[in-house]
Picture 1 (cartoon, one colour):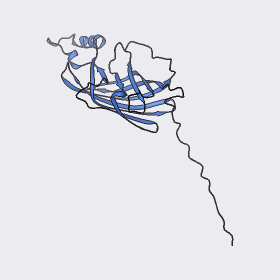
Picture 2 (cartoon, rainbow, N blue to C red; picture 1 turned 90 degrees about the horizontal axis):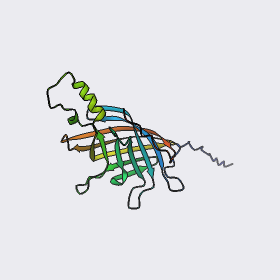
Picture 3 (tube, rainbow, N blue to C red; picture 1 turned 90 degrees about the vertical axis):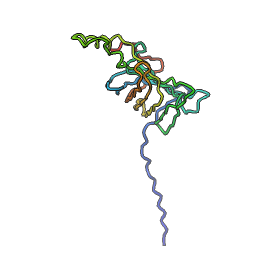
Picture 4 (spheres, rainbow, N blue to C red; picture 1 turned 30 degrees about the vertical axis):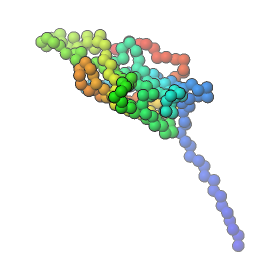
Length: 202
């Protein structure tokens, strides 16, 4: 009687390429991203931003430092700013989630910009030139900065690409009402020395 021992070698399934979020020198990566979303009743697309991810700051409990800055910085309509040091981060494989900490003692610096409805209000009677006035406001008015009181950012990295989404709710002190900003994010990694061009927003 013979005893046969069979050893089967299973070929491992190919795993997705893991991104190098922090290289061997300790520096992070930069991604040029496009933002598509809504704020109040306004829909927008094609808004640009710069996403940076790197090693955490010494006092941070998070695994990474993440910052998103909207471009152009001179007129940041429908863009947002996110600082992960002011959030609680959860990481898993190639994904991370940040949630804004609720604090009454300190204002969170993460914020977004939008054209508040109050900027379009005409104190006088409606005229035939009202539509022209609205277009003029869109071109010349400075977007209002709204600090996030609650919000969440979710990102997924794959090779040289990043996708994700974010939302933020804050209080418009000019309009005196709460505003919700939500956006989907997609972008490509760029070289560390490259910065987005400061193009005027149309």
